[in-house]
Amino acid sequence: MIVETLLWATEEATQAWATALAGRSALRNAIIELHGDLGAGKTTLARHLLRALGVQGRIKSPSYAVVEPHQVDGLNISHFDFYRFSDPREWEDAGFRDLFTAPGLKLIEWADNARAALPVPDLAIHITAQDDDSRTAELRAFTPLGQELLA
Image 1 (spheres, one colour):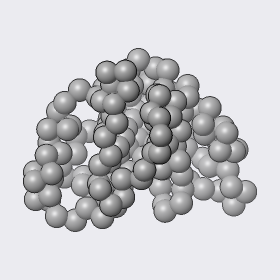
Image 2 (cartoon, rainbow, N blue to C red):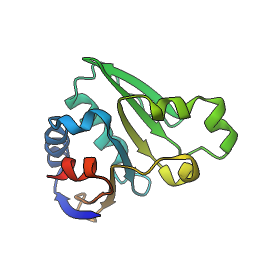
Image 3 (cartoon, rainbow, N blue to C red):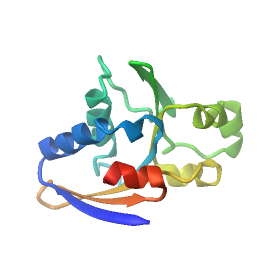
Image 4 (cartoon, one colour):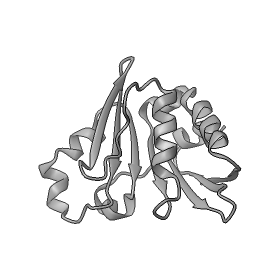
């Protein structure tokens, strides 16, 4: 596992990092988990990444829907938020297995709430809000694809 720590002093720094990540071809089939407390910046990072990938219009948080699908230039993107996920049967009923086996980018917030059903992520990003409104991000690559994303 490769671990890298970043400091995002401002939201613009977060946006710049997300834009750089969006330019990596390995992202097209990556599974990325976003970890952190409420308000840490998980959804903000996801929005910046989705915008950098070309998603237009309003980008909603998937908190209530559990998943928000997007498609840009032939790229399927599924943005999950398992904050309210508590029933393992919901995994099958909602067709999440099919989404995770299909090609495309998967962004996952609150992955620990669905840990038993999720595949190993390529990249896990642990975001921590600092007292000065900056963020630290610990990046953990678990697969060769994740390592490629960090290269």
